Image (cartoon, rainbow, N blue to C red; front, side):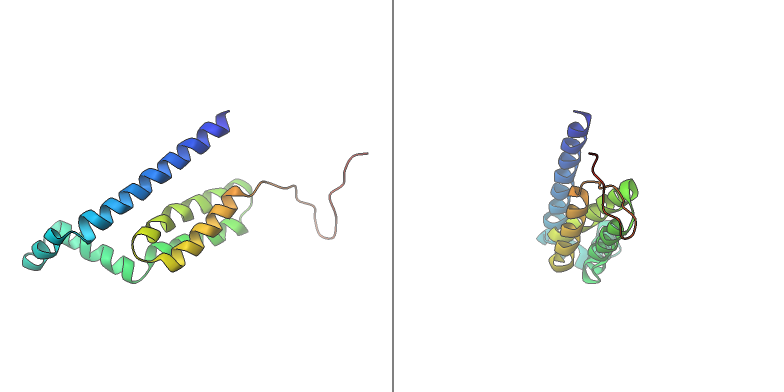
Length: 133
């Protein structure tokens, strides 16, 4: 029951993260009021944030970091791998919303598959898992 509550909380947090990414996209990046305001006074803090986020989108920083962490999640074992994949998912999901879908989709897929994978016992090289008689 405790693990189920953890998963529900994680899904709700992910949904809130997606909603926040949409708020940034439509409230800051695409809103016409900010285009005019930032053209007049580009030194304002929201305009600087908008410009920095635009550069991060252009250079695909979030999806690349998400992809690197999701791939690292497959290399690391057990809990560390799940934590790396979860952070990869957190970084890649805004990439789906903020115009960098190609890399972000791969990162979300890798992270999601790593998080869904169940732990299997390690067998060593050339050995198969033994079942009890």
